[in-house]
Amino acid sequence: MANGRKYFGTDGIRGVAGSSPLDPETLVRLGKAVAHVFMKDQKKHRILVGKDTRLSGYMIESSLAAGITAMGADLMLCGPIPTPGVAYLTKSMRADAGIMISASHNPFEDNGIKIFGSDGFKLPDELEAEIEQLLEPGVLDGKTAESVQIGKATRINDAVGRYTVFLKESFPREISLEGLKIGLDCANGAAYVVGPQTCTELGAEVVSRGVSPSGRNINAGFGSLYPEVVGKLVTEQNLNLGIALDGDADRCILVDEKGRVLDGDIALAICAIDLKERGKLRKDTVVATAMSNLGLEKLLNAHDIKVLRTGVGDRAVLEEMVRQGCQLGGEQSGHTIFSDYSTTGDGLLTALMVMSVMCRKQRPLSELYSAFQAFPQKLINIKVSHRPSLDTIEPLVRAIQQKEKELGTTGRVLVRYSGTENKARVMVECEDEDACKRHASDLAEIIEREIGAA
Image (cartoon, rainbow, N blue to C red):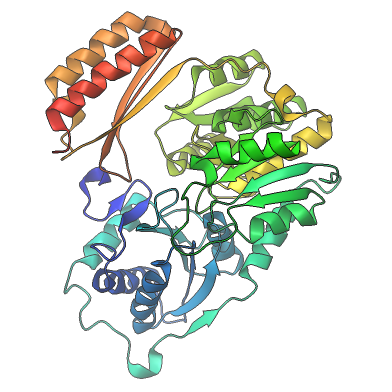
């Protein structure tokens, strides 16, 4: 895991449901640890919990509830709701903390935990480290509340409705989606209700896919991992655009009216240029990650917009946005953050903001990004058996240095570990597609040989 931790990675805790750390015993301890960290005084404390549609969400929710209420905190259960919905409701309902149960785009067998503070922001490293220490067996033994102080659990029946209102209020009041035909793929995940409901109430004609969750079909052939599904829907039914969300709906991939798949860089570019043209882009700056295409930087620079790059992960993007006073940032993977409205990536909010630009300019989606010229980019994921520091693998270090010298200013090399899976990721970007593939394959072969999974 990231930073040498036992439980937390770059985006919370993840694993196979039922196995450590997502086994009932560890999850009860996690509930106790989270409650302990946020119960700093004698008043009653409340912790909000949401989840996506995975079958294991019931087990995880119940285990966390046992630990949280055992410590004397009350619980607010939201049921299936997107991750940004949990962030929003944690702040708006003045909870002490919020927990989202989801493994995002992973298959249903996996699950995970994301934790938000009372301000709706993901926890800083120091609080995650404190929770890690409390998670160890025996640390909180004997710390449970007396019987008269045990907490209660309450189901928030209108949680989805509250989040729907937030999304609609974030959309410009002077604009309507009437006349737009939208293909919406919710990945059989957390947005299966709120996605179609919000777009329909704003006036759009919505054709939905991935809105029949079974507990086992989340992300299975639908959603942002399979944007061709909604792309086919767009071309077959002559729709204006397609929207593909992931399992917890904190990111989206768009498809234009011609069926072409657009990644998060294009959504970021469209919104940045629109804000700049209207004089509303603070500091004329956006934040992107090391994974964003050089084409994004080239296009935005042509509009006198500066691009700041940070590490991978929407938390890293948001931290840099806060430091720099920017209101827009995002990742190529589809996480886009509009900090005037949200404290985390929000797939539905992103789609609404792009559609507002379409409506305001009365132009099809394909025309809004026609100047975007992406550099060829090759990404290879390699399963690894262990995770030594990449700087200590001398053949890899030499190869990276050689390729960076060869590419010069015409390309980039990025090699890193995944924060959520036992994989190393190699990304090479340059002007020549064949060279791009060759460089990436060379580096992937070295990693496979040195630390590849058996």
